[in-house]
Length: 450
Image (tube, one colour):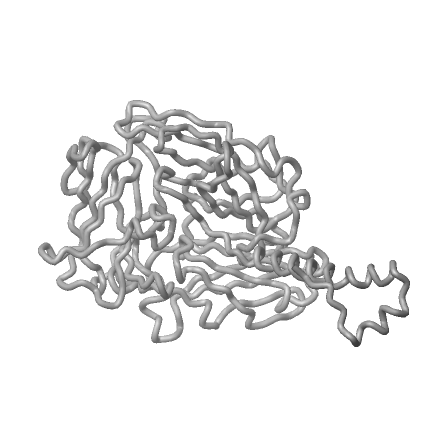
């Protein structure tokens, strides 16, 4: 409660005012305090960073990608006919009523200051209507799908976006959250990926250079208004760099020859295939029915650090849900147990070992943390995954410090094939939000993969 006590120094001031004026003056501190509280609350809320999130264990296999490109980055061109497809499975068997909403974010993935009517034309909260039950599977589930945008809404602004799915019956409860991008192509980005000149990283890294040409687009102060973000493969810790300009000249900006332009190249991803429960691939040791489901024991793995580089045509950490003999994998693919096994004579003392990739939502997920077995001298992990073709890597990490060491287990080689996503944000007084004015994906071997 805010006191209306009047101190002696104020009495002479109030004595000169009419009763109505004095009453209004007394209300002023209350108004200022309330305004301060609301501004503080708004500031605190806007600082929340929204990450890819799955709440609970019943929601599985969350995918968000362009409709016709299941392995591509979830990014669509503003005002185009392109759409994204969000899909997930609910293993709870209760088929609850789900709603979804779309939130505009700034470049740091915090909710922007825009209200929904400023970035959407249509409804900002609508039911998730498309679902189907699994068929002929041991593990039953309900499969949900949502196209973005759809008849409920379309986008009017570019930028970073979040889609949230939540239960609609009773108290609202978030079940998943995923990031995606709506971009414009207003400037030209020229890129080059090369072996580092610095001898310290020449055998282990890759340098990316970007040149921006904006002669037909108004930018008053490129160094202050632009943010160039480069992401290698998926958004795992340490894989995203913010580049700063080396040269700024009229109509062009060059980003090169700085430490943030260098990435550890890593190694080609490991893989396994669970598309067929009757036949083993070269990475599977055995397949058996156990504990009520089918299980795949992967062939024992060894660290690749120090080995000679060997090329493998991988998916750069992605996965595809598929069956060998069905065109309806979304509802006919089953959930199977997958057993990982990594040999290590002694446990690592400076970090924990994780299985990482799109299968772990590119996160250091506790459900994908391996445990060390002293008897077999191996790190082990058992998880349930939907049938398909998967990429993954073993990563030594310290989650409490948000640090990873991608080289310690699998090594890092300048020859490794990698995808790089480039995002260019522009925030000017004209717009008042982080506009995504360019997006480009390039490959270190100049491969077109999507």
